[in-house]
Amino acid sequence: MSSLTAKEAFAKLPQKLHNFFIKYPPRPFAQYKDGPSLTTDPDMNPFYHTKNPDTGKWRGAPISRRRSADLFKMAKKFGIEDLLPPVPRKFYEEKYDNKKWMLGMTHPASAVSKPEIEEKLRKRAEAIKNMDKIIVAARPSYKKLLKKQKEREPKWF
Image (cartoon, rainbow, N blue to C red):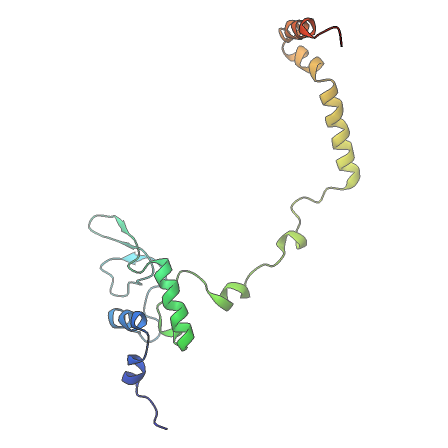
């Protein structure tokens, strides 16, 4: 068995990954920035958006999120994901290592006791029953409207 040289191994990569590494070669010790940068910056990360220092306008990332995901997945398949610049999205194990599972069960949003709920529902039902009185107290003209509604009700029911 003969061992592959770096050139031979590089030639066997998929075409998309091959073209990416030609345009953005792997750098030792992660010299790509881990975030947005200027368009003139030599350490610009192709997965993040950039700012033009002359005009002050932002440009989208040269490599879209979908393409970055494809590149990352292909690189992971070949075991060379460490050679890629830092990716803004998290994939695979990284995504689940720091996830807070079942947060709603460990810290419920509102833990109201049963007697409190019953008291609240009782007050609500009472307020609905006395709604006309409350409205008349706030707006006296509502009394005339109630009177007209009673006159319109059919009396033969």
